[in-house]
Length: 51
Image (cartoon, rainbow, N blue to C red; front, top):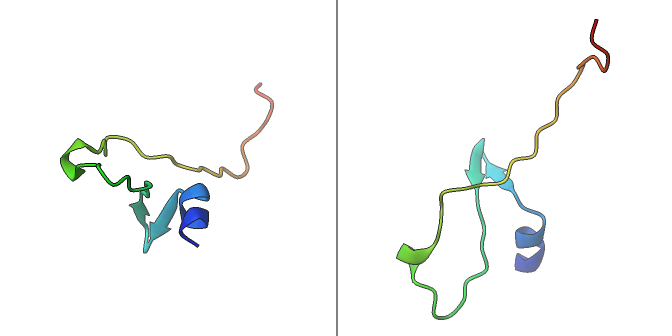
């Protein structure tokens, strides 16, 4: 279940992004890079041609 959650990310909970990363035994929290997050964007009704 956890592997699926990580592989199928990004996730959001109540509109807030949730970034998941596999925990390695010697990983120190202060060394984790939280400066990026993936987004999936869906845009509707964009014209494919310009005039």
